[in-house]
Length: 354
Image: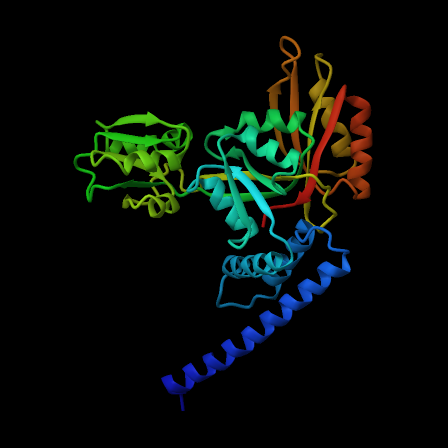
């Protein structure tokens, strides 16, 4: 005979009681681990990545792996907050996709600090005003974020993590309908990511580029004939109605963010290493750069060129490879690569995005 609703609820209450006990026990162990480390930094990217991978491996449903990852991210965030008040700098203001990336990676219990520019995020990390920073690196539709790449070349900060954030653009306004919308505010990249939707649905509306999607939402909140393209978080923050959801032209639209910090990260078991390098301006030079990777069985996942700003037609190359720089095969490849380059800088080894 099937359990009654009352019996089912009784079992849920009993499990909730057990969950509270287990979470409290976990938090106490996390505190003990922090003291055992000599009160070192509470955030260990490689350890948190291993925890989340193990959770996914143990999962038998019905909760999805992504749902469990979100739950355990928040558990680790709350435990971390018991040990130290960590601050993460991001490209603000509040309500940007960068802030969403902070919450996705570090959890809501982590303190966040908005900054007006990517330069200021790097400066906050370099001066110790923030323990870590989150900056956009590339978008699957619009390509690399040049300012981030330029700063990674010259900064002392290291990449210690990455966040893949699906970008879900929404149209929002104080008006209840989009019939009378004459202006649409958004960041340049967001306008580009939604241009086909705008052509079909708001062909007469003026498109106005502003410094951030959050700023677009703020401006739209002051004018009933305007709208903004931004995140749901921005709509909530500025009291706007969602007139349309998921209006990006590419449903797979994703932005990759880098987590930057001062310390190197130990291997987690599934890592990436990011490099920047340059070579002589001569035929076959780029091809020669790839040989050490192939010889030592290291896969390259990204290659991006940028002007070197040191001379006409000179370039630096940003490369992502699979593996950690401490792994023997990767270390051998990097040693061989250094012999073939005029400049090589390891930007960091870090857990691959979860």
